[in-house]
Image (cartoon, rainbow, N blue to C red):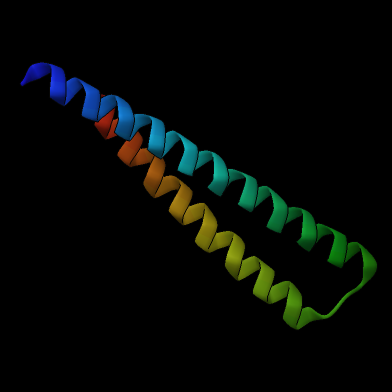
Amino acid sequence: MQRARAAYVTSMTNFLGAVLFVLMVGVLGVLGAGIYGMARGGDPARSNRLMRWRVILQGAAILVFVLLLMSRG
């Protein structure tokens, strides 16, 4: 029973780590697109939409990070 729990925790930790990595790359991509658009003097509505996505992705990344920390405890 203990071995099955350890295997589950390990696989869940690996999965959450991968999800966290994807979310962080997404945040970086949206942030880069927003900075590029701001430097170009682009559409303010697009900039607002990118900022909204950045906040959503950052919130999801923080949530996954907390879950990852809880799974190691």
